Length: 73
Image 1 (cartoon, rainbow, N blue to C red):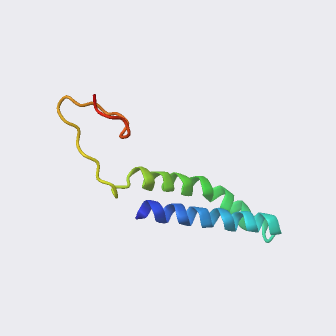
Image 2: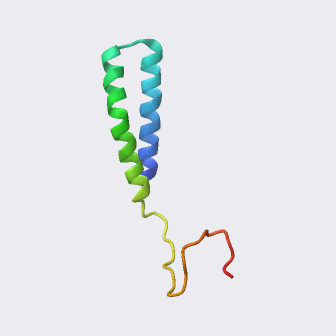
């Protein structure tokens, strides 16, 4: 859930940033949002990579990682 919420928040942040830049509302606010955006993006990626929503089976003793859409030989 954190991953989906972080993507939604980051998308809304991007839309607000684009609107502020397009309207010329405030150069200071747009500059601060621009400086904060890489940190928010890294935080979003962290939440996505650590998402435990889906349970994947553990690999057996003689199994190696592979794509899930491929049949086992």
